[in-house]
Image (cartoon, rainbow, N blue to C red; front, side):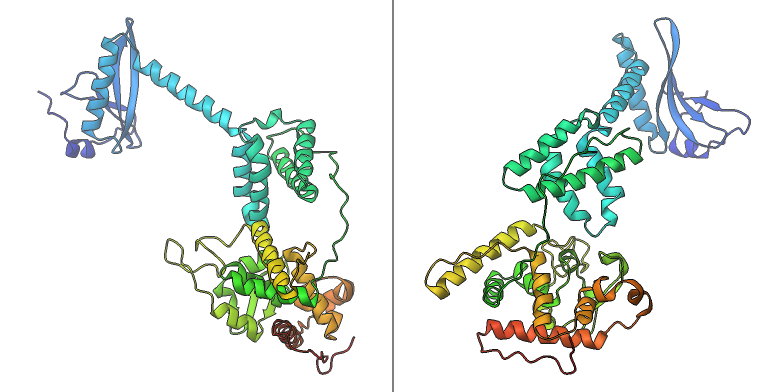
Length: 421
């Protein structure tokens, strides 16, 4: 009499290098332990259905143990007694699952997720692009097959955004969609980009918005009242003059002493950049309570989750702008209408402020990590001096200017020692 299967016996069973072995289970007729020449083991049920032999693969050992294999085989045998073919059911279920996967594969929401994973996640601006695609594209088209999207659909989408009073946002979404569709063409998802030939909704002009001294003071007061994260975040944007995404993703690991080191991967122009931190910025960062992620690690300075940098810049700007108008109204004793500004305008305000302090253009460009104007062309190739001392002096002077405005002191601006225009 053949011995009953045990886990130890199954584990010890040896393969035949020349052929596949099928060892029947003495306790359950039709159940076999299949042993491949490679040593891999699995379970199978052999039976007859409609007068013909059939086989049902149940699972792999040891993922499926002996008890689980017998239970699965018994369930299949019960189906056979009721006139159902378990192997055919399994095949149909697998085919339906594959069909469902294929149906999901080409949906806009699925492909935007893949675009984020394989492309956007490597870009500094990736989070912004993903947010805008989710908000304006996935929300509307998420369940649609990408092959259904036509040029007219793209135009209708952009017109809808523009008609809501966000024409510039429509231009941005157009650019993001164009990149997304081109990525789909590169990966053979699409033959043609449906956004090709779609023109910008509006013609944009270069912004030249700079906050006035009063607006700088009101902005600083709004940041004081706001608190974390947008209060200190706004102050650091204004005092350093760096880009929105660079400040948002700032980490303690990037700071050594009183210098903030940005690697090439962290900057828009892919040039490593050192930003001297003024005493005011050092104090601001020291007052920010750090938030750990789920693993207990400190990753970002400006974060509410610990796992990712702050986001929601549009709402944050609106909140600070409203606070500025309330503060201005209290100071003036009447309503004050402040022209619209953006977070990027703080960078332009810092550059203009340094110019007013008599700081040379080449130093300001070094502070901003610009490769243009005096820093372009042959100068950018051969001038390796990073102006570290000059940048520090410039940013300290700018910070003093902002703080004096906040304190409403009479300011007699004195150019930096040795500064030349």
